[in-house]
Every structure is written in structure tokens, then in C-alpha cells.
Amino acid sequence: MGTPVPQRLLATLEKLDKATFQTFQWHLMQETLEGFTPMSIANLEDAKRQDTVTKMVQAYMNEGAVKITRKILEVMGMFALADKLKTDSEKGQAATPQSSQVQSSDMETKQYGAQFVDNNRENLVKRVTMVMPIVDSLYQKKMIHDEDYSEITAAQTSNAKMRKLYAALIPGGKVAKSAFYQVLLEQQSLLVEELGGIGQK
Image (tube, rainbow, N blue to C red):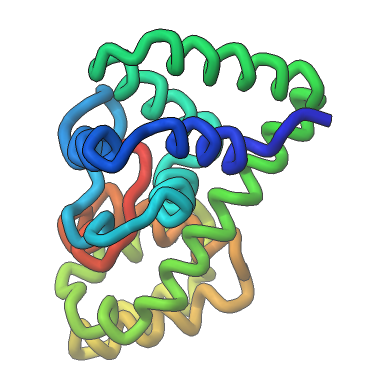
């Protein structure tokens, strides 16, 4: 079995001196790679190497974290280190069945989205004002039942709508909450980033 991705990424970042590591973090906050949302300054402020790896994996999943790390190393002219990470990653993929990789990535995505939605419940209830576009999207994805949709629509305030939405997502568990997170990324990306949640576009 190959070395887990977070350990490979940490081993790579540990080869950078302090100044080079800070430059690496700066690139994470830029539009370095198309399709990847830059991390916020608040998300990386005072983050050590281990913390940075954790945040990259949370934001981009294992494969995405490796991809953006390689890209940044190449931009910084550290081609040998980028090539080594590529080689190590290919060895790790060869040691892991493809179906297991897909299943693991899918589980990580659902877990992170559900965790973000749970951890930021009160902030989202207070700050999301355009609730119905989110509800409509989740209803189309069959994450909300007809009765719940009617109750949310009938609620008089955005706060009340959001609280009923949270209640409606409970039966769907992590799958429904992850879908909610993805819709938030599409419709409320600035708020999601402000609250520390980042994902692939």
C-alpha cells in the first residue's frame, strides 16, 4: 500500500525552507491553477506545514491537493521536487484500486461538506438571505421532499426558511448536507470562503 497523500504532501513541504514555504502559501492565495479557488489569507494565516496540508486536502481533496502543489512548485522553479511528487503519487495510485480511490474521494467530499454545513449553522441561518434559489436547487436534486418544500416556502423570514431547510436536510444525512454545501459554493461563494470553506469550482 502506498504512502497516504497527506504524508507525501507534508514530506514535500518539509523540504522547503521558511521563506520558500511562505512563498508557496502566497501562491495558494492566487489564481494559480484554473478551476481551483484561491485560499483566503485568513485560512492560511500562521498555518504551519501540517495545517497547510490539512487545509489543501479539505479544500481540493487528495488528487487536487497534489495537482496544485505540483503546479506551484513548477511556478517556483522547483521542477525536481514537483517531479518527485508526481512519481510518488503515481506509485501510490498504482498501489490503490481505482474504485477505492473514487469511493474514498467521494466520502471525503461528503464528509467535508456536511461538516462545514453543521459547523456554520448559525452563521448561515443569519446571513443567507436569498434562500429560495438554494431550496429550488436542492428540490430539483430531490434532496427535499414536497411537504418540506411547501413549509420552507411558507416561512415568512429568511431565518425561518433556513431553519426549516436545515430540518428538511436531516433525513438525507451527509449526502443532503454535502449537496447543500455544493449549492452554497455555486450561489454564495464569497460567504462560503469567508467562513473558511473552499472547494473546486
